[in-house]
Image (cartoon, one colour):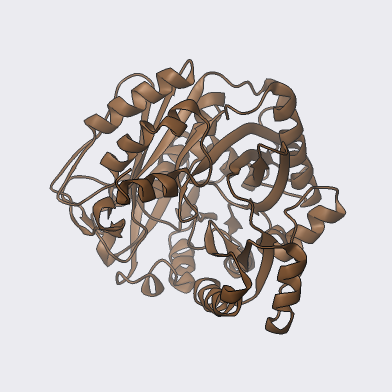
Length: 452
């Protein structure tokens, strides 16, 4: 096992990794920017190293400084968390070239699954159903023909994208060229790769993902599914597990497909297989694989009792899985809400500023993964996620009640947050019934604007 690791991330995920490593008797080094001097992870880690000014390019996206910090502090491995360098092939290869273990899958897997067109082609050849669309990036001259072949509405996606970013929906041919230009530019800025591919846009679907864990010896297991359909602009807001829409036969079919994806990819870490589920056709469609720990991983941990971050570190150190599929049991129900520094009354505009007072909710069945504290300045340079509240109960009704109570207890004074919005969302009729989909939040917001 590693003796010391560097955490190349910030906020709540940095805190989460510090805690997991501490339980494994592994010393931790965190890097921090000027804006994050008072970040909780800086105080919690065994050592903290300053890597630059607040802008991302001068700190958390400067991999030379991060890797220099890892070598100077005697680390054996680097944990990238999620976002930033978590799915960056060049960063993973640079770690390995310097004799550092990258806590994640191999660079070959990241490269293969990070290119959505390559992943689609691999899945199709392996018998996994994908959303109808193009298997290669499209050029402007072929746009009209391919769009007609697929049939409107279509969704344009960045070939190098992921995490709900780099997507644009087109409903008719009139908007095709302009949207394509915007999508290309967005992909280039966001991912350094302007390639775009097309898929059929399927509305009123469920976004379902399966948590998988694989080691370097060909062992693959799943930790059941998460329903991540409650999204705003393709960004997840609330997640829960298990999904209410599956019986055990359908769940077996889904998880079998997910394990097939992991085997086709020769996967060797913690990861997530994402699907769209059409309730009318009762069909699953593979959309992508996330080759990292997910923001919403706690709901899978809660229902199975398995620490995914500890397992991820152990696998990277060369160990085989510490459990078999037969040993994984799901118990009860779990829900996660993402609390962000944003103002729902101002179109969810980011809300930087100083936190004057912070009070965490608690009680049986309430978990808080937080990266903030009283007095912390929330910087405009970074993602708006402040913390995650996770509740669990013997059933969904109990988990929901605990979540509503936890949201009412949570105090973050000094900046705007989406806590009130989350409370409203959990009272939505579709959400209460479990009969929600990827359009539920948009419909709810539009209904409020129209006075419905």
